[in-house]
Length: 370
Ligand SMILES: Nc1ncnc2c1ncn2[C@@H]1O[C@H](COP(=O)(O)OP(=O)(O)OP(=O)(O)O)[C@@H](O)[C@H]1O
Ligand SMILES: [Mg+2]
Image 1 (tube, rainbow, N blue to C red):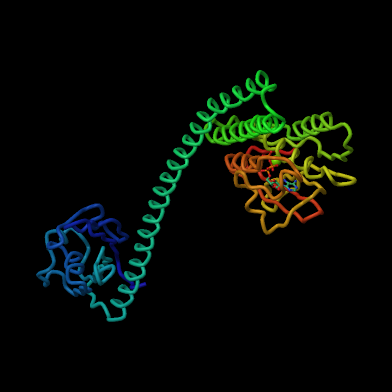
Image 2: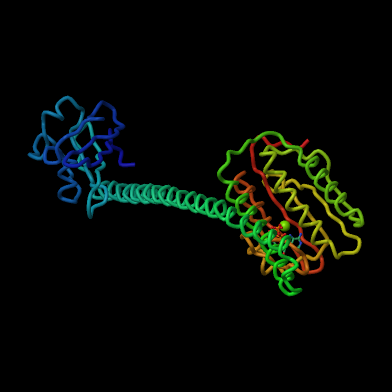
């Protein structure tokens, strides 16, 4: 742009000028370092202003010995970021040349935008560093929390077993000494210990998902869904549910964990259609917008108000009372964790009285749908 015969890009490196790059008709000083006080780029940085030299052999700021082997007769050097220079850009001419004000201004404008770009890079690098730091802090906190909830729930099992054991002994051996009220109370204690036991087991399972390694391989989701629905139908032969499962949906995932995902979603669909006439459950997929298949489990059961949709994926959050539909509220938290571990997403669409559809993705590259 300036019509020069060569250009250098210099970065300040402590008390030195580092000639980082050059593009010229002959070799200059690429890769070399000079003290700030002993070269013209240093002068431009220290004085925070351009240096324009028509005859380098007449200017005392020029270290002549460094220039003698080069083609340079005239030059302009401008600092990058005038306020606190971090480098300089030089232009050189092989024949005597008096750089015009426009040329100097153009070069300074170029140096200014270089400064902005360099500052942006610094900002991005700083941000990236912070993201990495925060992520590892968060991961460490999560691991601690998981270890904590694992050991708490694990340790709760022993005293609970004892309570259950003593209450059972009491109800078996001392039932005669208790009146109706006492026996009823004891029964409730035993029932609640079973309930608490279930909660503890759920918590243990939940905290173990992130602890174990993913064993990824081809998984026939259709087969898993088929088996899960058959088991549910056998357990409740009185129910008539229209089950539709798309054939041969093969995903690349952890089979054991996908079994848990589909068990939870399909057993929810099964449970929440329990009071629906003409109950229908569907497991299928649609090709997503970005080529990642979107799997779904759809039912026409109780549904819920979408205003609470986000809460569902947190542990122990339930939208239906235990008397309406039983459960502990851990199923979907487990499902979400597993999907996230596979790098996927899960979301839901529902309407009260009309049913719910849970969608999820498993965006692994090697995924194929046969
Ligand atoms: N298919 C569905 N239709 C309607 N509501 C649903 C459906 N699936 C989940 N929900 C709502 O989301 C809540 C959380 O579901 P989640 O599976 O986590 O717990 P749960 O089924 O209550 O208990 P469990 O831990 O035994 O699975 C449920 O209590 C219910 O209110
Ligand atoms: Mg459930």
